[in-house]
Image (cartoon, rainbow, N blue to C red; front, side, top):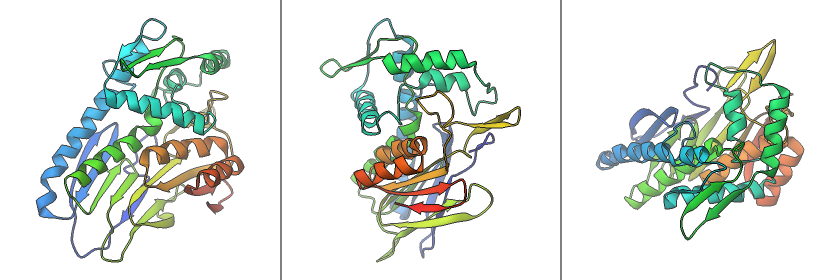
Amino acid sequence: MKKALLLSLLLVLLISCSEPIRQDRLVMGTNCSVSVFSKSDEKEIQSCFEILSEIEKRISAKLVDSEIGEINSAAGKNSVKVSRETFDLVKRSLELKELTEGAFNPLLGKITSLWNIGSGDEIVPDKQTIDNLVHHLEIGAIALDEDNLTVYLSDENTALDLGAIGKGYASDVVSSYLKEKGIKKALINLGGNVYAIGKKGKDKNWKIGIRNPEGNGLFTTVEIDEGAVITSGSYERYFISDGVRYHHIMDPSTGYPANNDLVSVTIIGRDACLADALSTAVFVLGEEKGIKLLEKLGIRGILLTEDGRTVNV
């Protein structure tokens, strides 16, 4: 996704005797597809898109009547009761914030909406305004009441935005649904966030090609037997102002797009929500600190640097 939305960050290479049964829809603000490999499983695809639509209605920060939208509207005023699913996701997002020492931060909503990158109406905000929001980001508090399933933002200058884990979370939910229905082989592609269920074939892994951000084709491929392959990159969404390119991955410590030595970060793992958060966090941290985090967690990653190096972790 650049300003004109890319169909996919990742290209899935399918070399199989059986052709997939695939449906594509625009949901969660991106092009999504679900593929199954048995005619008897086709009926479940519609349910997958219904699940995705329901998730979007609950967690999209862009919808004022979503549960996240209601939490943001009530910031500094009152707590909001939410569904168990949304409560658990907000709780997980705060755990991931701690895990990444703030490199992933779900409270960036005011800053991301201020920049508004990808909307076509982007601006370079006033530095004083950004600095003020970063200050509130550092002191702002969020309170969770698990007994009553309520969420309270104490500072009206903060807002929840789960966009950096939303598609990863959705991949986990949809993949769990398909597995519960007994589906042994499927592919879920949510705007480039790919989740593979089962092996491609007997003794054959899936091959996932990672798109070259500087042109056509791939810069590398990875093999997985099952799980997620998720990429964050500075080339996905951006705008240019006065000759300077501003991308959408914000550094919570500055309120500006992360400025480091990376072009893209790909995370591979069974937990798509975690992979989604880490693809953002590692990008924000940069090569050295990002590698240390992945090694500490034992998570597989591929980093593409500005000088063209591919770093496998």
